[in-house]
Length: 240
Image 1 (cartoon, rainbow, N blue to C red):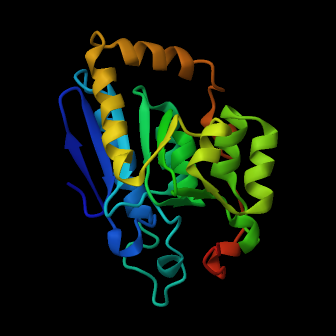
Image 2 (image 1 turned 45 degrees about the vertical axis):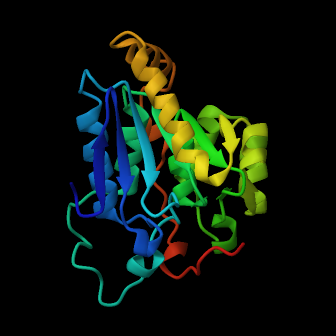
């Protein structure tokens, strides 16, 4: 168990849980490092057919923790080799297991990118996804990379230019979620999907995923370019 995440193993599948509920599971570099390590460890486990990502406290992720990013004095982990968002997405990009996402309550900015990184998402009817970087004058390299890889440019434009909240039913219509259900049923429904994947022959899901992953550009860095945009250093939180 890490400081900011923990892993729950079940029969044939596992959960990675973002565990900063006091900050609505906002991402900081050491959390990203823990997610990277969890992905890299679980994907080598032959008994694991899929990896489910969720947030503690009934919400997925509120994005990058701007309070920590802008803190003065800086957090003790800043400047240390504890992990980073881009490396986390490279690990998600290469993951050899199906990635499942529980979209409870909200996934904002960097939280939205976690949704896009996953292969199957269950969303709550009133849960929302929001790419609000346009409100902050910020770049969106991870969101843009995943959306351009998996969806159409029109979907990318609809989400990124308006910067609004997109609810579960519309996410299904756009092809961004497998199903929209009552809020209380999100995790139960997704766990049923994980259980179903675990019921197939050992290694079957990995075989399918490796075939699909093999169709992606080999160089993950070309999908997630480095950005020199510094807007988040002074940006406010995204509005509704």
